[in-house]
Every structure is written in structure tokens, then in C-alpha cells.
Image (cartoon, rainbow, N blue to C red; front, side):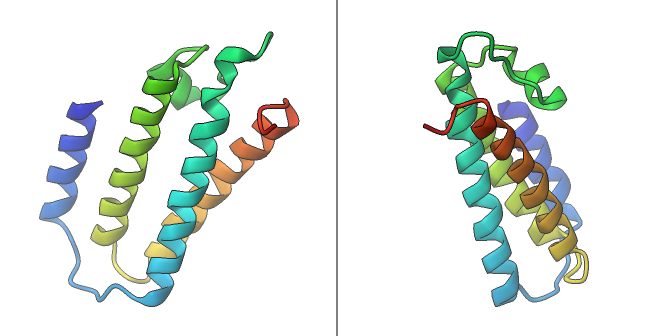
Amino acid sequence: MRTLLILTILLTSACAHNDPWTTRDTVLQVGVTTILAYDAVTTSRIQYCENCYERGAVAKRFLGSQPSTSDTYLYFGTLAISNYFISRALPAKWRPYWQGANIAVHGIAVNGNCERGLCE
């Protein structure tokens, strides 16, 4: 995970755009970070649920089918930080699409986790 974070920082810092960061960018990034936090909390509860397992293809590869709390928080923390750096590196016209897609994908994951009873 640390290697992934370092690689993301190095790759995105070299190609960062000089486009100004706007209030809209900040609001959307707070939304991304918030939904990642909800996803982390609900995902960390999978280990306590019978017949529940991680369904996300990427997350399952990194976390396994029954992710531990510490691994889950490390994974989602890395996602939040790398997402911010990628958002900063993108041109202003592409940022809302990147941020919106992340909100949608992780929002769907949180909704699925809640439907399985992991939000209680």
C-alpha cells in the first residue's frame, strides 16, 4: 500500500496542471473523502457479518474477502489521499468528472453495504 501511495504521488506531481483549485473542487473533494470514509466504516464491518464478504474487485484484491479493520482503514486512507493528488493533477475541466465518478462508485458500494445490514 505504501508503494502505491508513493507511486501515485510521484506520478501525479510531475504532471499537475496549474489550473486554479476552485470552491467547487473543494466541495466535490470533501464529498469524495466523506463517501470514502463511509465506505471504509461499512467495509470494516464485513468481518463481523456471517455470509458477508468484500465484493469489490479491486478492494477484494487488496483486502481479501474478510478485510480487517486496520487494513480497511489503511486502504481507504490511501484512496482518499491519492484521489486528492489525482484531482489536483487533473485539468480543471476534468476534475468534476473524476470526483463525481468516485462519489458515484463508492456511494453505490456504501448503499450495497447498507442493504446487507452493515450500516447499523
